Length: 380
Image 1 (tube, helix red, strand yellow):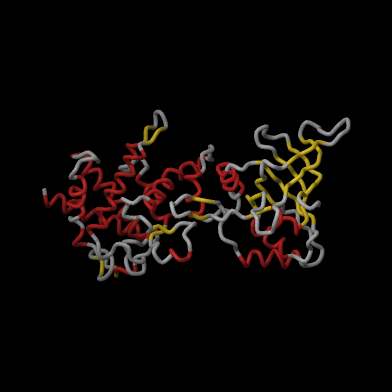
Image 2 (cartoon, rainbow, N blue to C red):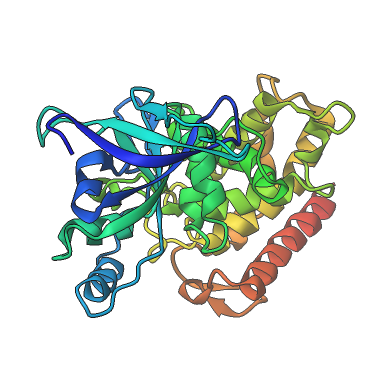
C-alpha cells in the first residue's frame, strides 16, 4: 500500500464488457479505508439515497468474536461497488488470460483524509465490514469481489439480488424497488408498482398518507409520526391490482402498460374520503386507532374494491363531485365502525383486540363489505 493508492494482485473476470468485475484481497484494516456503507435515507425533498439497512450490533459482535478467536478461516467475502477511477493493468507474459479471467494489478485510489468519502461502497457484507474494522487481526486477508459501477441503479439492483437467500426486511425492499430501473426477477417485479404507489402516497402533498407511512428510511425523530406500516398499504394495493380488484382494469395486459396516474387518483380520492369519514381515528398510532392498524388498512382496502367499483360505474375519476360520491358510500358503514372504542357489532370483538392476522382481516373485511352491501340494498 502506498500513500494514496492500494495496489493488489487481481483477476479481471470476463463477464460483462460494460461492467468490469474484479476478484482480489484486502487486509481487514484496509476495508474501512476503501469502502463506505450507503445507508438508506431521504433528503428534505424526499429523494432516496443509499440502500443499506441499519447496523445490527449483535451480529457484528458475533462476527468479531469469531475473528478474534483461534484458527480463523473467513471465506465470506465482500461485494464492493468500485469507482471508475480504479485502474487495472494486465500482467505481462504469454498467457495473462485463459478466456475467463485475466490476471493483473488493480489500483484503488484512497481519499486524501479519513474524513473524506471512501471511493467504494459496500453492496454486500456491511456487518462483516464493521467487524473487520474492529478486529485485532488487522492484516487478515479478506476476499473481495468488486464491480465498477457508480450508478446507484446498478448498485441497488445487485444489492437486492445478492440478498435473496437471507431475505432483506420487506420495508427495505419495498422502498428500494421504485428506484431500480433494471429488469427484476418476477417476484420482485410484481412488488414494484405497489411500492411506487405507496412511496407516492407517503410523499405527495395531496395524499392523506403524507408523512404517515413508516419506511426503512424513516429517521428516529420521525418514527412517532409514522403510524402506518408500508407493508400493510402495499399488500392492500397488491390485492386490488389482482383480477378481482378495482385497480386491475387499469393494467393493459396486451402491451404491458399501466395507467399509474389513474390508479394513484383512485387511491388518493378513496383514502381521503376515509380520512374525512373517520377524522377522530385518522393519524393516531395503531394502539389508539385500529383504522391505522394493519387490520384496518387491509380491510378498508378490500372495501375499496366494492366502493370504487360502484362509484366509477356512474362517474369518472376526474369528476368534480367524485369525493362527495365516495363519502356518500362510506357514510353507509360509518355508524357501524368502532376504530377507537367500543365493540364491533356482530363479530362481538372489542375494538383493540382486532389484530393484523389473516383471520381478523377476513372477519373485519367481510363484516364491512356485508354492512355496505346490505345498507346499499336498503337505501335503494
